[in-house]
Length: 451
Ligand code: UGA
Image 1 (cartoon, helix red, strand yellow):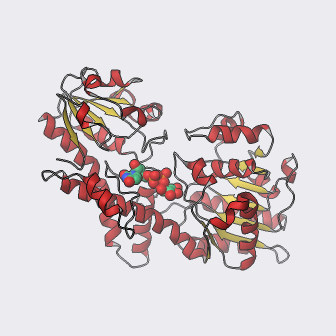
Image 2 (cartoon, rainbow, N blue to C red):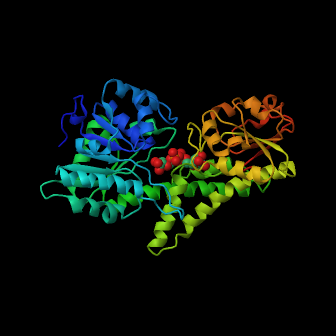
Image 3 (cartoon, rainbow, N blue to C red):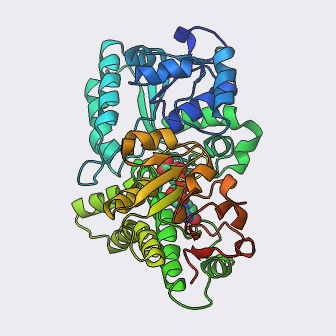
């Protein structure tokens, strides 16, 4: 049963988030905005310190407002000590990262460490706790890794429930998605844990709760739903990128027209059919590979997922070969890249296509100039002095031989012939088909998915 949480000190808070990344911080701040006293902790002290000053360590629209509100009213408590957080909380949300090992399989180190910390606490001080796994974990992680660690230390008198509650929010619209979830998935091995979490969501989403589909299922299904969801999204993207590459090799074809038409078939649907330079980010690439490795480990070769991954690995090279075709050779050519983040409205460059394209251009002897509204500093950490960083689009285009629009940031959508006139050679590659071709007189314009 949830206690009344309208009190100020950490001892009275009963919900903790372990992991202050996009998922942890956004969800914690949202809960706190709904009046739930929430603790957040992270192994990275600097990250917590900057959050405590209202400084969000990554760019996520609307998140700073959400966090600052609850720091001010005391509903979000920053706690530096993970053990204190665990001791204080009745419900513990695990929102740490599950990155890839070198072979692409899931690295559970952070999850395991947190679970071991929880086990230590419940051994010393038996108490009822509900552990909610929001981190993405491959099927059977809960039954084979998490449950045994906790069960070993559990004293008979304490009730420990473990729930798998995957997250479907997108970076760049994390706050919106948290306020408006399209689904709530709760995996449990008994009814009691489910009831506890359902009551919390009922309190938080209130009148809205009846409109949100709730899937109550097993741990394994909940774990697999998350992977199947991301793998299916990746499959749609690799599929449409395949169609795009076919379109660009024939006359009078346009991938957007094809995507619009097939998207009208209700069995297909219109979303995630935008062809581009390939999917990036901290989730889709990692989760597809982790699912491939997991599937192989249990004796099944997932050919489809392998193809999805390979198509995505190829797609940045499609962009580089478009540039090569336009310029003859890339050696000693100046290429301007507009857009570096893995998608618009974020400064995240994890697995961003830009990194692969810049590396390939440098290898081919090009000089690279880059612009991005948010991600310049992050890219500087990767390429240092090897490329030129421009704070204005104009600087980036000046004396360039080819411009590649790699991210569909809003500020690039209005670029026209006038803007491109400061280039040395007026070659433009539009990876998302965001420019108006009628405003590009005298520009050598190519787009993915069109000839
Ligand atoms: C993805 C999922 O969309 C979320 O539901 C999930 O919660 C999240 O991963 C996660 O597992 O945490 P995210 O990585 O934030 O969210 O970004 P997406 O919006 O899915 O975009 C991923 C990549 O696909 C981007 O590089 C984007 O440019 C690309 N994309 C997206 C396309 O190439 N075409 C499209 O039609 C859509």
